Amino acid sequence: MADLPDLFPGFARHVVDVPGAEIFARSGGNGPPLLLLHGYPQTHVCWHKVVPELARHFTLVIPDLRGYGASRGTEATEEVDPQHLAYSKRAMAADFVALMRVLGHERFAVASHDRGARVGYRLALDHPDSISRLAVLDIVTTLDAWADTRKETVIGRFHWSFLARPAPFPETLIGHDPVYFLEYLLAQWTASGDLSAFDPAAMAHYRAAFRKPEVVHASCEDYRAGATSDVAFDAADKAAGRHIACPMLAIWGVDRGQGAINTPLKAWEAWCPHIRGAGVESGHFLPEEQPAATLSHLLPFLLAT
Amino acid sequence: MSTLGELFPGFSEERRTVRGVEIFARVGGRGPPLLMLHGYPETHACWYRVAPALASHFTVVAPDLRGYGRSGCPSADGNLRAYSKRTMALDMAAVMTAMGFERFSVMGHDRGARVGFRLALDAPKRVERLVLIDIIATSDIARLRTEGYKFGMLHGVFLSQPAPLPESLIIQDPRDWVESRFRRATLARSPDVIHPVAMADYVEMLSQADRVHATCEDYRAEHGVDLALDLDDREAGRRIVCPVDLLWASGGSLVEIADPLAVWEPWCAELVGAEIESGHFIPEENPTALIEHALPFLLANEA
Image (cartoon, each protein chain N blue to C red):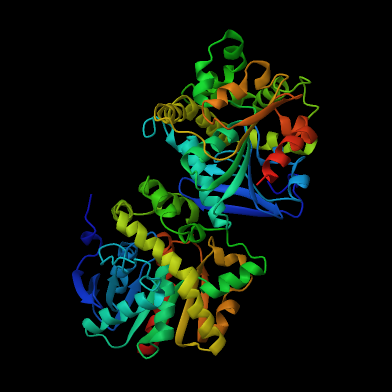
């Protein structure tokens, strides 16, 4: 990874060894701690356009999720881990509580996108004492997403069922041309329908990560967990009436993002009665497509006390 | 599958209660006494390829440190000294006394090397010769980190986080945690280089909640009282008076330093050392080279 462009100049690099994973993270900035969690099919660099401004207000920790980018997860197989717990959002949430502790942060805010946002709300449910505020970008919960069986949603989320098929089927098909698959998905989910929103340096990171078969496999495992343990944990929390207690913000893209198919705020209210939120003129990749608008929502929320 | 005892042919199992803690040790061989101290996440079993070979030259005593393996596991209960290296060193000195050995050599790996280092500083009259395997003194790690050295950010920082976070994560899948230690730090990047009987011993240990906690306390002590003692000794100019042999792994964290011996010089009145082709787990990965280097050093007095 040393030959990839540095999108966070001056930021420290960490490799933190935690049970089940080796987490790579960058950190920098000044202020209270803020954890930034990326989604699929990306890495921590997806935050690069909003980081310079956020770093003026926060001590940022920007990791790769286990298995993604430069973070490594457990090698797990269907036989020993049929619920894909090794890539559950619960396991990933524990990674970040441990990572933040190691870096000296007991309690911290979280801003999170896509798969990272699933880790974000899991952090708030599993570790309420550790999370001060939570922002989720362009998701509804895994349980709510699976419950939506409208035709346009199912087609739009084809990758959820495709990636969740048992190994090595999706890995094999993606592996024939991983960059094609990566770029197809990225373009599909932007408002412009192409890759113009993505900085070439960030694209270099995404391509390099997706060229690694272990990253493709781990990201499939992430979605397999999404079809097994993640949805089970959501259902258990819902049945138990557990809510997200910390202040929470949901923002979403209205153009090919969640806002095009859903009313995300209504879905979230069942999980967090005090949630606030808004749609943004953007596709799914808000921090890269509309960094200024993303900041205009994130900053007031994160700076409120 | 063989038993652990079969990996140490001719050795006896000994138990001595010292300072309120029962210490288990495997003892065998003939000759002057040699105390062999294991590291994390291991037990005395880690010496299965070294202790039998050294037993023809030494009376080998291979204990489990307190909290580890088959030794007692006293509750730390907020007592930061319960698993300090000074406490562990006193255990080991007392065990050797109980076995009738007043002066002895020490070979320590990883955590055990930290205990050996502390023992040589605290009880200089008792240690004849000291072999340190693949460690940098705690205070030197802290200082070198501020100078930009990384040494990875290895599991020590994680294990020393306040209870119960590390414990609760490790106990969820002890086998994966133990195996991943060897995936991370062996040259082969595989736990398969470890004898399955020894591996079973390590996994069994960290499947017990009280031992998971005790071994985390070992690391918490390192970042607390152990570090403070090191800094005191360093400031006072105290040094290890016996000869020291530093052996470090070609695939370990010491190779990040241009000259590991230079880092150890200020601690030692008499220092030799060498790099060994191995990952961090030298006693199991390259026991032949370890014996080739350490044996002449340990036998030097006899010559």
